[in-house]
Image 1 (cartoon, rainbow, N blue to C red):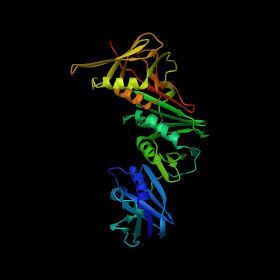
Image 2 (image 1 turned 90 degrees about the horizontal axis):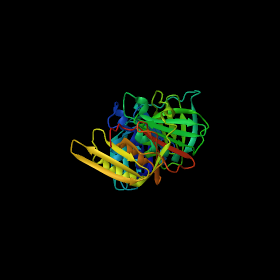
Image 3 (image 1 turned 60 degrees about the horizontal axis):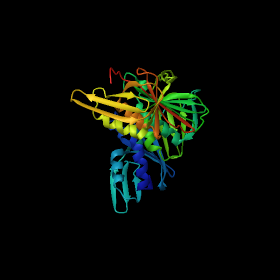
Length: 377
């Protein structure tokens, strides 16, 4: 076998595909890329047995066909340091020795037999549960960006260790929660025309953000045990989390009559300053909300430190004292991108609902944060 390819093109694809490979693998073969040459198309595959990412690229002067495995880390490190130029690969079909040649040098190494590489993509068996649709990449990336931070990490609640994709005929609802905070993001940029749901783990979500960011659209195929994301350049198959996601609609308060309107950036920077002085054991920041100002206070009795700040606000209710965790609050306010943020409340023991002051025409973002017990301000 032999083929020519641009070093920059090859590096772009192998560095993307390498994001699936774990630092430590149960099978040594998974430390490698699987290269498959067929005609003028080279496919590069990486897997961790749960997730499989495949890239397709055109090569030149191809001769022969076959499969072989190349050490992933070594190849990525080599291409990273190589200037943009043509590379020629010559593979001996008998002993799988690989000769990589370019204008000013050459490298040689031994490949592994491609037949040893495991195939773990879920069987696309005929099933009533299987369906597919195409949606803009922007819709997928926004869904992941708005929910990934709120995913749980408790092994006792595996269903919360991922993002719920609740697919409706007219759009997709992305949901994540760790029991302390919850995010629900509706997006109607596309109409799947189907109904179903699955829980996407954190690692595949991060891979999609990195690999598909420059693609215009993604075809999503939902199967009984896995989901496949496909574009002209990549195909990514990942197992989703088994089990049922909690009923998120039941948790979201339907009536929070009191609304606090805040300048998002001003509020965020004030919380960050006050958070420097919170007790690291619980991260509590106390808030006293008045008609025209919000006063925040943090203390750490272990080090005899305290902080107090005021920011202007517009509050429709009567004076209220409530407490929230500073790290969680910073994550929530950071995710909202509008100039103003609305905090909807009912009483100090009920969850606070954070929403952007203006929602776009095709999306709806809601974030819920459980309060902390406050004895006094």
